[in-house]
Structure formats: structure tokens, C-alpha cells
Image (cartoon, rainbow, N blue to C red; front, side, top):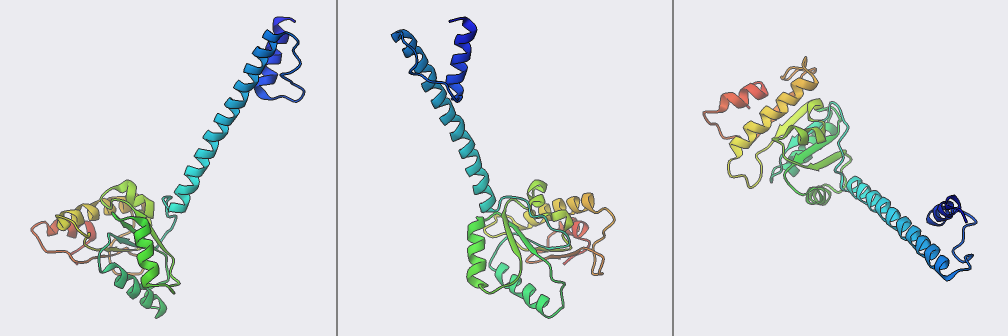
Length: 222
């Protein structure tokens, strides 16, 4: 048998090509070699299959966990989570039902476990027809604000973060980061109460000497 034939036989055994067999060799040494090659091909296939399966499971888990970006425009965005979040969602739903606020999806970004937020909303509002998306992240970071399409929100509600040591500082950073993202995405959109403006509400904010920073980011004191 030539070297080329031997190499082709090895390739056929490794890849499991139709017609290849590890039992056709007559010499014991040849049978040993071809069986080692066949087993190597089998384990290689199992390893590749395991890697592919693991990658697909990770992608599926990420999709089910809701870590993907919320693709919305002109929606309502709520930053942070505290005891006032659920009542605010109920007020939004009531205002939409009465026609006071345009019906739009609600996206929530907070430093809180997504599963906990979803459970709290389902428990308090089991019959809600609002489209509410929750994402876990840091509202001071632009990359996390992009998870909820922060640059495209028409209504922004910022509440005091729960269990924060310095909520004023966090509100200042969050307002500045979000306003920078909005100016990048929609440079011609201004803040205000008009129909074609971005509406901001900063709740539970203690007045401090840094008021001018929040005022500059949000378009005025709230």
C-alpha cells in the first residue's frame, strides 16, 4: 500500500466516510493502527458536537433570560427600581386606558435581578395588557442604557435607586449618561412637555447644590 493510499484510508476513517472500515486489515499492527484512527475520529466528532451544543444552549439561555436588546422607539423608559415602581406602572396603565398617555411599551432598567422584577410585576399586575420589558444593568452606563434603547425613549421616568448609599449622585450620573445618549441618537429632539419632545420626570430627588447638573441634563428641575 502506498503512502497516498494510507493517508486516504486514515482520512476516511477519521471522517467516517461511507465505505471505510476498521476491520478490513489483515495484519495485527495495521488493525491496531486503523482502530486507533477510527476511535480518534469518533472522539473528535463527539468533542465538536459537544462544543456546538454548549454554544447553542448558552445562546438559548441568554435569549430566554431576556439579556438581548429591547428594540423599541418612542417608548416609555423607567430607570431604577424601588417601592414606587409597581404603583407607577399601574398609573401608566390607567393613564393609557383613559387616553391621557399614548399606548407604548415600557422598558425598565435597574440594578436588580430580572427574574425578581418580572415576578413582582406578574404578582402585582397579573391582568396587565401593557408590554413591559425588564433588563438588569447599571443606568449610569451608556452600554446598559442601550439595552433598553434609551436614546429612543419619548418618556423617561427616573426614580431613586433602592438601597443606594448616595442616590443623588447616582441620579445625576444616570441623567447625564442618558441625556448624552439621547443627544447622540436624536440631536434635534428637545426636552419639554410638547407632543414632539422628550418628556422627563426625576422622582424622589433631594435638592442639593448639584441641582444645576440634573437640571442641565433633564431640561429643568423636577
